[in-house]
Amino acid sequence: MKNINKKKIIQKLNTDGLVVIPKLFSKQFCKFIVEYLNNKNSKINLPFSKVPWGYGNLINDNNFKKFSNNKLINSICTEFLLNDYEFNHLMVHNKAPWIGAGIEWHQEVFNINSYAPGYKAKDWKNFLQIYVPLEKQDLENGCLKFIPKSHKFGLLKHEDMVGDNFTHKRRVPFDIMKKIYGKNGIVNCILNPGDVIIFNHLIVHGSATNAGPRSRKAIVLQARSKIKEKNMKIFDKETKYRKKFVKNSLTKIISNLRKKNLYSDMKRKKS
Image (cartoon, rainbow, N blue to C red; front, side):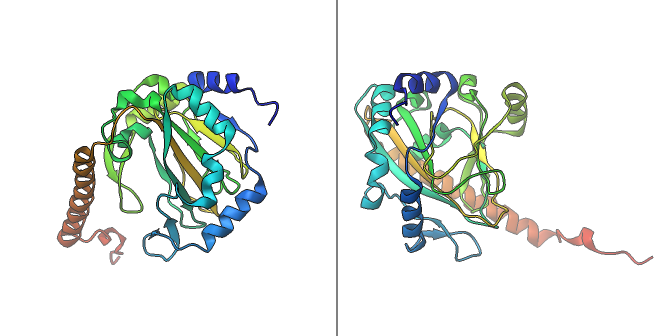
């Protein structure tokens, strides 16, 4: 920890859009958190299963205070955000073995009206995402992926979709992904428990499904400058839109199922 150069971290955040800090939290502490979560009731399960997906906002849970109270994380937030800031939420992403869904390629600002209603996409420099794997992450269990320096492309277009967990999502369209990947490539983040990635809200990131036997839990902690009040009218409008999109999309799917047999091509014709 003594060898960490905070100035270089800030420089790397500005130039690359993200920085990796190895071993900021101990493996023993991460193991404690995993065991705590394994005995905690989930708020929502993965579709068609009893496997936990999410536990809600844990920012006020004392077992997680060590993440938001970390001196290095707070000093980075103080220097990068340049304003009085707060930690808005602390979530756990539980990408379960065998059935854990992938995350679409996106920029965090796509959903700013949900997590910071009243702020605009142009305010992206007033946010930082702190990501802490609680368990080892690699290609087998769906590690985090980035398009390096993609924040320099600015705010990208997005398209609405319904995710594997039947929630509304916004993703970077196919043609744009093809273009930015061709220019910048992909970084697969192979991480150990307790490593930390800090990134801005404009860098493009996502992850694949967990098709392997190992669990992949991770902490997502958001810091933001306190420059605007939450606008609950915007929040209500946004949540209504997102719920309506899912409802309408699923209704169309049901309608198509009633009109035709999607499995008809599987029929064998008599010779």
